[in-house]
Length: 114
Image (cartoon, helix red, strand yellow):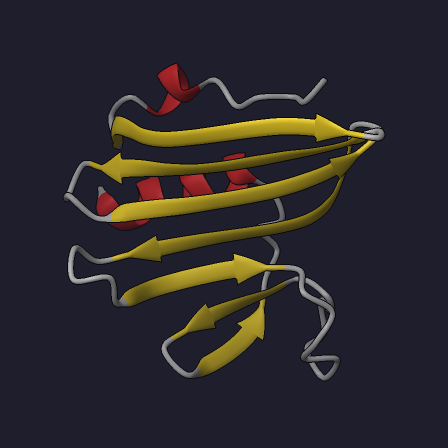
């Protein structure tokens, strides 16, 4: 079973949950979702866990026109980044990232919106 984030903790910035897909198969669980944030931007979420351990993630914060504000993921490219495989996309720039789970990203977004 997955460890879900309590979105009530982020009710000041998360205004709606538009889509949620969750499934499990052979000790692997996948969560996909889309949140509407306070400024009408969207947060796309994808998490893959194996036996409760987060093994892959991507969180993409997007404007209403679907352009990327910022994205976080742990795809194993960008080996030049100090926090490899964890990294953040800001426009065409790829930088180190200490935000490695959904709660980290929501805290980061809260600071940016407030």
